[in-house]
Length: 117
Image (tube, rainbow, N blue to C red; front, side):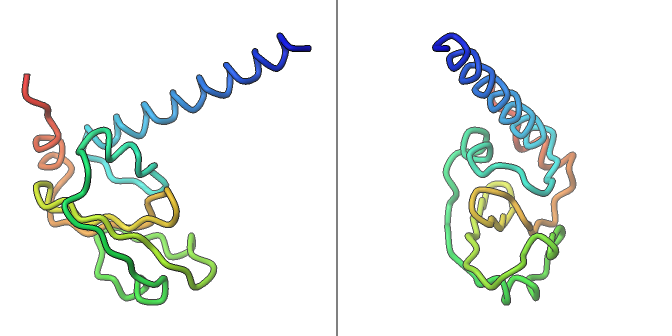
């Protein structure tokens, strides 16, 4: 029984690790997609330069490059992270990306994301 529990825990950790790797890969490639985990941004870009909050009702009017309004079912606070170096404002519901604002193309974000060798 203990082996089965251990196997289950190890499998769950491996799956989580694979998902986070995929999220980080999207960020390195300059692809902002809905539901990316906010920890992936911290691991790739570091801490945001500024943080603030907005209400979901205000977010509906947020001029955005990407927005997932259907993900918001109730009025709730949302976190806004601003990365000045990347020219990006990210909006999170909990730990998941629900919107962003940027004038950068994926190619420009990818170039900015490259770590110095």
